[in-house]
Structures are given as structure tokens and as C-alpha cells.
Length: 107
Image (cartoon, rainbow, N blue to C red; front, side):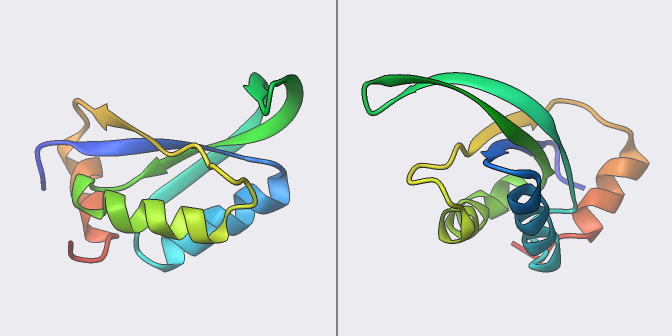
């Protein structure tokens, strides 16, 4: 078990894209688990304010896999600049963190 794992946050344009990204990341052993849920985002893009439905993904992975995971997301994502933000899981149950680590490719 490593001391901390990040939970990455990512948004997708649709449920289908969220599901495709989640499956691809777990199959590639870059993520142990991905949760996704509908959200609404208000943001500025190309000088215009957008207010749109999106899907937010919470990706459980290891810090050592961040670069590979970010590259895979960029390769598969429909956005020009996909959101890829790492947030630390400061604590977790030892059994869960051990399971998480066991699901990932060795970094």
C-alpha cells in the first residue's frame, strides 16, 4: 500500500462517453474504480459562457500512474482540453487502499 492515492476528477460530455472512459481506464489497469454521475457545469470557453449538462468521473488510481492516465484520457476524450485534476485521498481504510493498489498496473 502506498501512503496516499489520488482520486482524479474528470468531466465528460455524455453518459456514453463517461462509460467508455471509465471502462477503458479500468481495463488498462490505470484505474481501480471509476464512479460517474450527472452534473451541470457553467464555464467560459472561447469567450462564451456555457451552461451544460456533463458527467463527472471520480477515478481511483495511484500517483505513479498519473502521467499515463492523463495521456490515455487525452487520447480518448472528445474535449480539446479535458479536465484532469488530481486530489489526494488523505486517508482510507487499509483494506480498501490495498485492494485499490492490487487492481493497478505496476507503476
